[in-house]
Length: 97
Image (cartoon, rainbow, N blue to C red; front, side):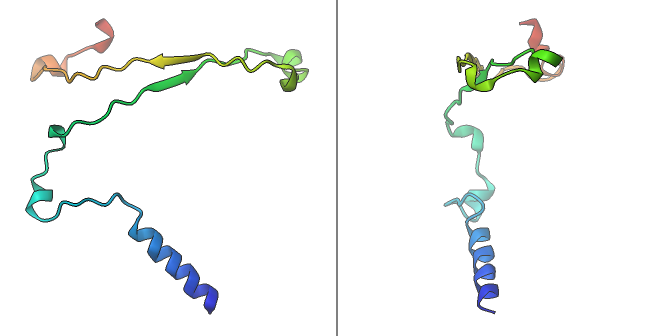
């Protein structure tokens, strides 16, 4: 019985703080405009350390003998919002830039 009480308390306590708490309530939360607040840009990093090993090489590969030379590439992102609207935005092809 004591364990059941602890389990229920953890479930209830975890669900209270599961979502981000906001200070906005009522009409302020209803009329909140998220695009008016500045957000910090995040940098996406990709590691290129894929090994193209086939059958015998893969079987005999010794990971402890491999040097951990990690090659990382920062993927650039555009922080500016596009000013296109209407048909131009619908038919926009980013790969043509």
